[in-house]
Image 1 (cartoon, one colour):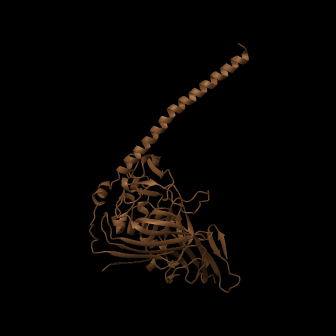
Image 2 (tube, each protein chain N blue to C red):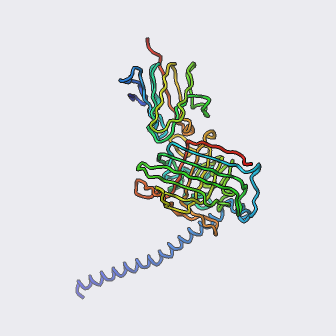
Image 3 (cartoon, chains in turn green, red):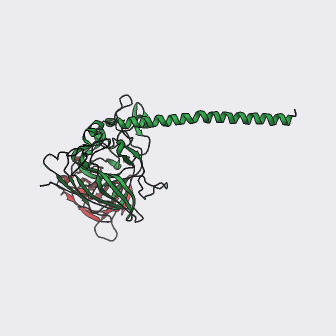
Length: 329
Length: 123
């Protein structure tokens, strides 16, 4: 055999061996990747089933005639007529040990990640303490300010508990403008969350109740905070008068002040109980009603971040408020 | 007109008015810039809202919810600008020497505070 043939055969053998190894790798890798994906899906399903409020929601979600609020319905009006708003930008949330515990004694890990708890694999650890939630979320310290924030909200809290039907009502219009003069608007609620999926929603509107953080009512990424008023419902997202996304899950709440110096999101022990602000959230998740869980779905906001990506949520704070409330007759 | 030395604004006379004026800006970063100004008694401070947000200039203990938000020298009167929209201004003349700590009502929780140190007029 000539040397060139030897080389050719050797090359062919080498190529064949390389190809075989690649195929073997592929054949073994595909099931491995598939299995890993299955594991993740199973883990997610388990986490979602483990939400602490699951039993409570099961007991209330088919309730046709829920009881009313003690003392009667409460009417709430919140307005902002001038001034800018704070718009949260994607950021890594620092993890409060009061809420999330420690690596030795973790808390608040169940539920759809970000909607309710934070799974352990999403937590950074340093010096035996949690640091941040690794994926970006709407609940961090980064923000921008936008002009001409306007808020007009009228609501009634009548139904006390989660139920199949509700007497609660919300009529909200919120808008603000970017530096190019584009107007962003959120309207709600064509439909209220009469009952929750992974946490209670009290008929869609709740007044005078502690939420978030350790309560597990809403995301644990927000600090535990007293909410004078809150709602959950389905609304729509507009830009310059054109509907970009509908229906979308909208959550709003008037709470004690949960920002600190530099507008950093507070831990539980840093909240200022004597000041208030209104939070508007259009979440990058959609409810899967028949399964009682949430699935990820970015919001079409129409606002592009400096890196060219569309902001996948609205988390907007209004802080120049007029607030009025009374018991209905 | 403001001169900055080591983070402290030193008052310099405004060229077009008789009374000396020191300027402090209110920002989107929830800060008074400069945060601390040092002036002579009788100087007027002008706050300019260069942000998109509504702010206040408040040195009134009755309007504060945190004790550390306000400090007034003995004999000084409290003051409050009310809501200042974007581009609005507010002026206050400081006659009583001492240290004044003031704050912004909507952003008191975010620790938006400023300090004016008023030095007596040297005869």
